[in-house]
Image 1 (tube, rainbow, N blue to C red):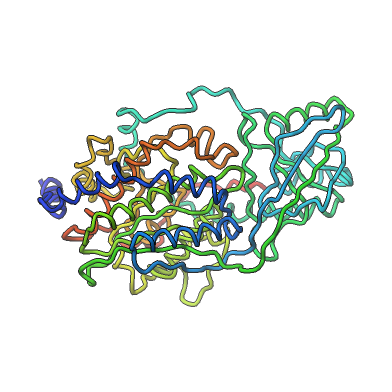
Image 2: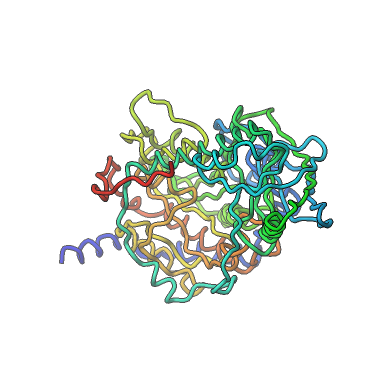
Length: 533
């Protein structure tokens, strides 16, 4: 009975849909269908601006263009906020060819934030799988003058599921599971150790006289990503590095196994930009009528990798957030709470933009006066710094909604292990159930910009989305281009996001919050550490 009364009281917080709300919903749907701009926004980000690696020239163009669009639509307080990041980097041109035993143009990409070749490098390959420091001894004295293939040559298994799919009702039902948190106090140390390994590997290979590094793409199908994480000023690698398509890498490995080792030609023309080490988040607002009511927020990350155009990851989410802002502004809504829109930088390097926002506006983690490390070290260590100290604006953020899973249709919301919000979300999504977006599931999600808000006890949420071919082929890959976006889905997503934001902004009370997190006990107090070295 107690649980039933709680559920009833929570539903009451959301309140019934009023005539004014129904009119606003109709205006939102009209704007989002008959006057949609979501695909032109996505096309400009994809085709005109292109890849948007944090602090790259493309990202700088995107920062200015998105602010200009927000101003054009009449949003207020349009600005960007900087945070410490590191170096800009971009690719001018690159080519990798096998010269012997025959000439083959290989599918390859420079690894992000690695130096160029300063012309052309021609050298034989050597297969030297190195995954931990203990592997260094196996290859000492054998790498001078070589292009070192450091990935263990192992083909991807055959696909057992279709690469493109939509969620069935059964699929969504399986997501409705409360997941108990798992706390492993030793996990942070292990993650930081793996991060340091990349620097140690570069130093070892440089010291051994290697001329370049080659890694294997983690997908087949001639897809490459070029992901790299040594972006900090003074931290970038010393050796040129390229990622090869899996099929090309495995061919080279077979030839090296049977001998003689094939010879490669690598020409990598990349550019570093150290003019401004700050990265920037972009913000815009629709002002609320009650200055004491706080604000609700929607966000997507503007940055991308460089192998494709960053269309699905996360041009799609960016376009939907921008379109939701345009829809609400054009509909003339006057919400009680301010609605803030955020386009994050540095998400691909560790959710760095949203982490900077949390630390500047919401809460600090760690002992008073303790400096928070930057870059990937900050990402890996964030969840294990105690105590959490709320800042004056901590309670102002009533709800945050994130989009970052491609261009698939929004099917509802994850409650993120917060069961108290389930009936409220169902009420907010009710007008959009016929569009397929009426589902609410308990499951907690990670990997994108709502995570650090959750980790300090702020209600941050993510939408359920149809996967399409996002995870199977497009995510971080060289085919992340406009033609993999689904226009009907993106129009639907923009409408649903705008509607949810307006409901959150006009709700009588803010969403129920979890308690302020405190240091948990180890989930398994009897576990032994499994260090690599």
